[in-house]
Length: 185
Image (cartoon, rainbow, N blue to C red; front, side, top):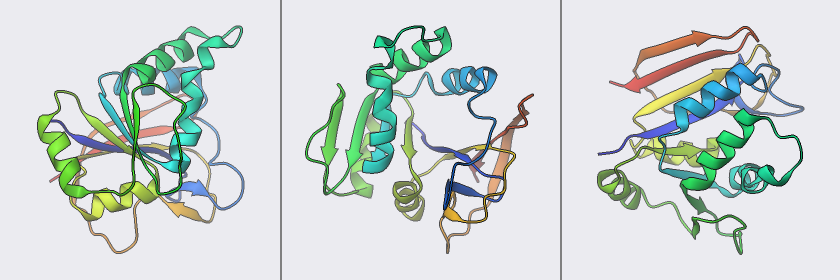
């Protein structure tokens, strides 16, 4: 049975999207990006909301740009190789291969996908992740914590949910970013 992993870059004060501006520095560092690529290379399926998909579809064509660093090309190849499911009521079509649209998030369908998959899955984006968390589907949480306090936005963890987690891995990078991986107890 595959695990469902929720992972995002988050500000020091716990926001996966800032109300204004970006989440701060650290994630664009080559060391961090290479680490992220290594951690998520085995993922077989990405579950996205529309907005996160529209951000991530960049990886479908980045290899066509000039002078792309090797670690970026590797991440693009890994992303392109994985299946993608976009949960959206408004997206009319997709612009990446191995991608399909689902009109609603069905926790039972995700449970079946986890049970049938040989490779882990990720749920990406705070809105979609909130639904997966509420349904008890998330097995691991990977936080990439920047050095910035942004004061508002969309929280990494949804309000009204209690989780007791076990820290299983942590790492600090020279850029100041901290990686923390937790699993559900």
